[in-house]
Image (cartoon, rainbow, N blue to C red):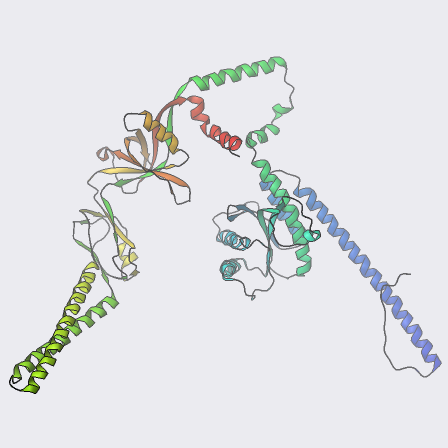
Length: 548
């Protein structure tokens, strides 16, 4: 029988022989009981290990079952939660330097506007920039500042007692390191495609057990998600996906049917190629008056008075807002006090010089001293007057005036600005001449501007633009391109766009309102019907096949 342990008992040696035999029988009974207990414990561990392998086998089968990224992420979240035995498991996909939540255990769809979702994505983006796993088992632990802020912000909403974040990585090439299976660092041989977030809301289990299972889920889940994303990145993936499930794929087509299908396809192709159609480039835009200027704070200070309101007519030079700078007022008061003190001292010196006897030698020496002091005070008075003039100009600059004749556009100025601190260069309000000419400020995606520039080169006249107001979609208005920006700039979503100014007849448009949203279309001539309908597909094929 193999030995499983050793039982040691320390006691005083018995004097009687019968007592020794009793100790031997007692120790033998304890050994038998201990042996049974150890064997039972080993059997329990084997049963737990067998159950774990069954769960792991089930997870491996299910996670590689689909080549759809959403389904794969859903399986990682739900099957992984069972394998790890946690309260919640979330799966995030890497997109550039940020991460986007795509699946969570027990949830069928993700609410993108949820504050919890946004804080979780910010937390994972901050942690994964360190390129290593992260786990927290005690809320009072200290962390680096770049992690502590998003971590505490998320924990305040989620209330997790234990949280672990592991990257979902795919092995690009094999390494010769035998310890790769237990290494928790992300090296250059692995491509990170996402991350998993493991959370426990109640009891915090053994960190070692959860760590081993989490590593297994992250390794297999990373490979499965990578394969799904690679499969979906193939050209024509949506068409191939629908064709694979189409009942026509399973039907046997005869030669006659194939010829008929080819004839129909040829006719459709001829129609698409030979039929001309209007080629228009769409964008987004808004109506703006040409004469429009923003009024900025000229210095740091506090808004003291607001003399206008939204919709009020103003003229050039009329006062709009007055600011107050306590430091400037204090400095101005100090300079004026020094000017008065210097002037009084000069008056005293002048009087003292008049009282001196010019024939007295001591008086002559004192007169020279007073003259030198007077010259020094005159220079100081000159410097103080220059400072006073400069401070006075700064105080006058705190009075903000209208740069043009027009109307105040900014809404609710009293609530937004009165008695509030402002910084130098901060925009406070906008004034515009609504009775003058108007233009359409249009934004076109940088990927589309090439068609506009090509059409402009071929045309001798400015390209026509048609647009409709979102507030009046039944009426279409016309305009012409006046100017196209030479460079592209990022919009609010970070996508590059090109600014285009469109000239229009504002007298024909009813209900003009600054910033009114419109849907503009630039007329770029005519192209074949097939190109107009399928140009985005052609451009996608060019990018995927020739520049992939």
